[in-house]
Amino acid sequence: MSNSKQLPSTQSAVYINEIGEFDKIKFDSSIPVPKIESSNDIIIKNYYAGINFIEAYFRKGIYPINKFPYVFGREASGEVVAVGNEVSNLKIGDKIAYLSPGTFAQYTKITTNDYKYIKLPSNSTDEDLKIFGSLFLQGLTALTFINEAYKVKPNDYVLVWAAAGGVGKILTQLISQIGANVIAIASTDEKLKLAKDYGAKYLINSTTDNIEEKVKEITNGKGVDATFDSVGKDTFEISLNSLKRKGAFVSYGNSSGPVTPFPLSKLTPKNIILLRPSLNGYIATPEEWEHYSQELLKLYESKKLKFDTFKTYDLKDYVDATKDLEGRKTHGKLTLKIPQ
Ligand SMILES: NC(=O)c1ccc[n+]([C@@H]2O[C@H](COP(=O)([O-])OP(=O)(O)OC[C@H]3O[C@@H](n4cnc5c(N)ncnc54)[C@H](OP(=O)(O)O)[C@@H]3O)[C@@H](O)[C@H]2O)c1
Image (cartoon, rainbow, N blue to C red; front, side, top):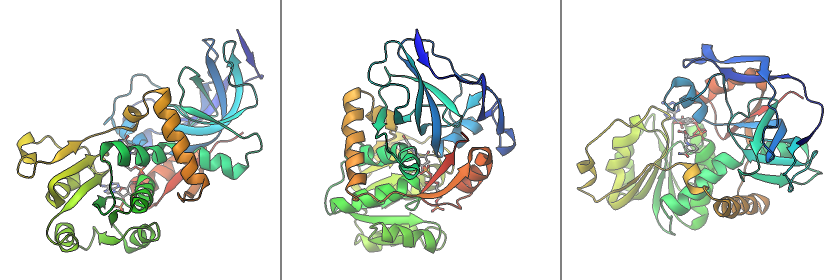
């Protein structure tokens, strides 16, 4: 039924048993190691797992959890250590990067019917494994959103919120490279400097500047073509007011909390297009995954996309990492090193 290395019965993992604040986050070695249950399953021994803001939404109950213990994580790199007997495209020892729930653990099971993985070269270095375990979720979010949520065009004026954040840094680079004008918003001058280095043309400090006034100045009173707003609740009105007639509002995150319900007629005065997209809706078929994951790899490998990690934390220190992330102390990508 399967081919497998000898695996332990339990493993170290970061998880919760109930919704709540940081004190609910557990790290120990009590979580069972998954077993091959179907002939298309594989088990991966993880090396690095990228950290994403979405974990905070699960922990706080903003997004639903079906089953506890809930092991955090959405992406990782690792080595295949067990394969079901119908798996033909991967073998034990292969290194892969993949998207899946449950990656803040030493071992994760996925099924190869789920296509969201790429095979990595056998001579991948530790640095490669760190990058590819961390690049895909935020990279594909930025890449799909600027193509499908709002197709960014040269000369557009585009507002990028949290421009020095994980997704924000990538959006800033990709939008600038199209020849559009990125108006970067961040809470400190240090973060804005990073956004500038990554291609932003205009900078707005959300702590000290009047954002709407600044946008008016920059766009000669016209407003922006699009806003990529990951902050949610606190910034909804500012984004809306900053858009031009027929502008596109891409609301894609809840860093300050979910946007509160509002009457649709708010969109009418300027005929605003509003989207609330999710990455998974743009990589929902093997063809879409193949197209966008290859495009992202090309951008990274040709050095058109700069991607490095802000900090690597040990798996056991996830609570410190998410306190930093949720406390707005970070920029770019945070990664976990998984104990071997
Ligand atoms: N829809 C999707 O499919 C999808 C996919 C990936 C990510 N996302 C969303 O995209 C956003 C960015 O994710 P990320 O992992 O790259 O995180 P991130 O942007 O690196 O971190 C969050 C940043 O948001 C800003 N922020 C503004 N108000 C905040 C508040 N009240 N609390 C905390 N942060 C606040 C901070 O930047 P400043 O200090 O500069 O304000 C902070 O550094 C998240 O909302 C995430 O859920 C959505």
